[in-house]
Length: 334
Ligand code: ACO
Image 1 (cartoon, rainbow, N blue to C red):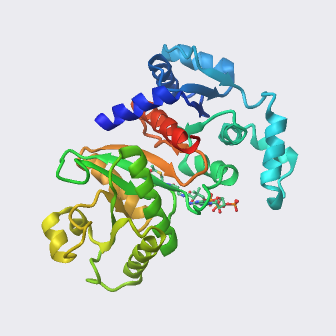
Image 2: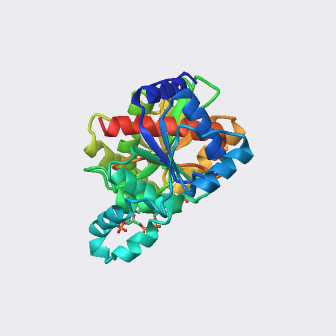
């Protein structure tokens, strides 16, 4: 877990402003106390200040040092609404509709970031992934040159023989239900960048399928093979191989047998799954059955760092993800 320690230590240096829209949620308040005590980030809690104080008191925590903002009454509402209308003018958004949307902290938070009033956002302890992501996709949008937002998990497995000394990155476990070959290629390239930035590993990307190098014929296999080709065109220096079955990706003997001469097969540290179903199920299988630590989803490809929590998250998950968000903010807003 040295990596997580490093991410937290870096966050302490960056002192980024992270907005937490679920300001009156008990785990969020407990995490806020820890983050402030340890100096990991500056925290902005959204919600009714009276309610936030009441829940904090009930939890026996102090959030002194956090900035509390009520989206329903904040003086910046008019300014944010004008910005929203400008961004969504082609969709016909009116100022009245924008002001109503701003009552929802999940819309207020991205507008804070868009206006330079916060550096990153973390939510999802009580809201679905779709509800956290939709406002971000609509108002923050993607990084230049990127068309797809996706979600990666950094997986810490208990066997250093796998991945990069037991660390692997899985994608897309959170966003695109059924990516096209081009979208899958973009997910592979973006995940390699995330892995370099957060884990500091040299990416070896396996494009997963139920087939290895034509062992099965099916349109789903063709999609992964095509995605591999497109990813090589986007980033010719990337070490990537596909389509590969999971054992060919991870086990050296199987990899050399099924994809001889590959610089990825048998030693992959990034696993790109063919779709959201397999990726989401896959990371949870490894997390639950193999007792791996799963950090994420780290959302990638967005123009500012907005991350989503699982509703089953713990207080320490929130602390860790605030630190990850701060590191991403430092990378994006250098
Ligand atoms: N990357 C970039 N932009 C996107 C993406 C994407 N992956 N997906 C949607 N958009 C854009 C659309 O182009 C659209 O833009 P526009 O309004 O400017 O035209 C906007 O975002 C909204 O898109 P819609 O498709 O209308 O919104 P929808 O709500 O249907 O879909 C969403 C987006 C929420 C991400 C949806 O794909 C979704 O729910 N995905 C699954 C999330 C999920 O449940 N994950 C599993 C749980 S996570 C976990 O377990 C850790």
